Length: 413
Image 1: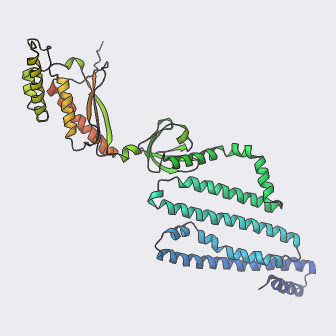
Image 2 (image 1 turned 180 degrees about the vertical axis):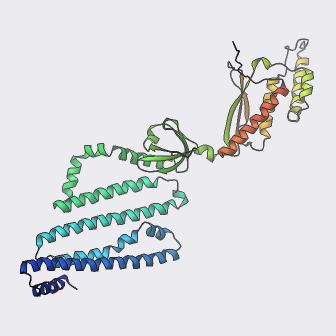
Image 3 (image 1 turned 90 degrees about the vertical axis):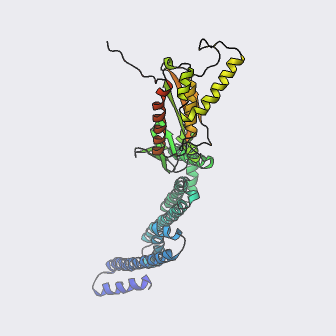
């Protein structure tokens, strides 16, 4: 069904109705165009339904989910437009035989449509690859969106240049040469995009941040899990469920804390101090040592330590009429040993990692006794419960060692 035949049919029909030759030529052209576009539109609808149904059935039967993502991203919808578009382009020369100027304008319009359709097809395919790669475990934490966005920027740039080339009738190389001359302006306009792209590559290559990492960036109020890394920004879902957006290049220009090392390790660090009142620290008498020996965790330690102290004092003939002479056990030292043994036998503490109780430099608030260990459970809620339980026990144990916790008392005037 050539359009020249349709146009001739309309032409003869309109002449029979008494219209002039000039009016008939325009009306026959208009009716031919309407007729062909209606036929092509109906064909486009039929093709889309047939193609979509066919590929949906194939996607359901196939083992891979790649074709499912093709359907989801409307790749086959766009591909179905190709045949009707080709038919129209094929028919255009015959439709506008008597109107060469209109023909060139319409051809340019459909060239632009072809360019835009090509971009949409490319975009749908690229998005399909993105979704498919994100379904693979080894790619889930990679900044795939950044690379997709860069590719699409170049695709749209080439598409826009091609459209301008069609409209103006000038070669694509003319526009590319002009872009080279305007490179400084382009760099200024796309500065953040270029920085983001470079940063995305650095983040991926250096494995600085992955999707799912817990990061802390106090400067920008970010403290939570990374949920998205794209060309321009990194989205962090904070623990209060708010979203913080950070420019991607800040991950390479500013400092931040990534907790992945802790999550990948065997435990989560506990590093907290008890402030012991200085005036409560003293040497232990024999009677006090005997009382503390009833504490199961340190009974063996006290026996061996007391034996070692007595042997030393006897060997060196120390006068023990005064308690300060020679070697002695202090309540602070015994409690420090008790805290260490308590941590080592605690079921929630990782014995394979550092366990230490150490005394820090004296402060105006007392003597800090620091607990340094790693919990087996790294989940925040469980971790906080473990820390609280440990310090509840240690705080309740302090009076047994005749020690006191420092408390700031205000004197009413």
